Amino acid sequence: MDKINYDDYKVGTRVLIIGDNTYGNRCSYPEGEILVESGKVARVKFLDGSTDVFNKEDLKIINLTEESTMPVTASTKKTVCDINFSRVKGDQILSIKVSKEIADLFVNSNGVGTSDVYLDSAGAKLKFNKEDNKLEQYTEKFRNQSYSLNCVLNRYGTNLIVDGKYNFSVLRTIGIEDGVKVKVNDLILEDDVNNWVQGLGAFIKFLYKNYIDRVEVKATIVLEV
Image (cartoon, rainbow, N blue to C red; front, side, top):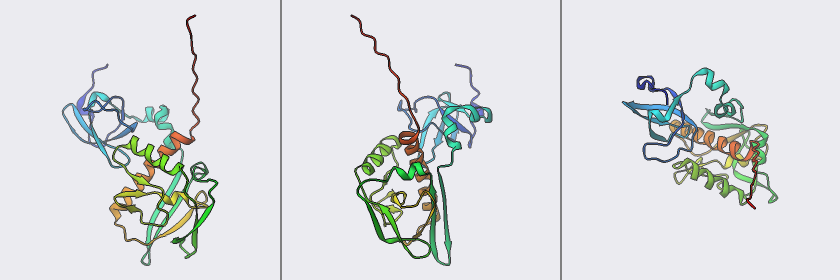
């Protein structure tokens, strides 16, 4: 390995994770941003707000040339979700639009329901895809990969944060691929909104990478006879 300059690993520097953390555990995120650094180690912050500690030799600084060519960051160039949260005349409005590929993940044969709680900005009741077994599979696998980030998809019509878990059930809204505006009734702090948005971003990246990106696996089996 080439000799590295530990002083280059400054706070705010974006890095690729190329090794295990200081406990010898594998990280679930390909990249992050240095939050704190000291000597030969650095604490890295990820999209969901979680952090982990690495030896600097297990981190690779991202420069502009690498970012435009490396496969690990190429997928971030595709816009798969637009989110805006605003307060207008006392009303809290969540505007959200996701790609059709993401929206289609929640379509199932159980039909469509109508919410008495989630309303659009005009006061009309929103329709949503009913629950199926895929929802628990999505959240469980995401939780296993993200360690500390817990979320639910089966609480449509409730608060954005439920029992300490991020509620991403809004992704089941009919027409979300064209953009929807949801009136949020529970009073939510700005920090909670930011954390929810970051968590949703991490979850959508997880869905896109694991369920939408085309992956081809080839294998050759050789038997001795």
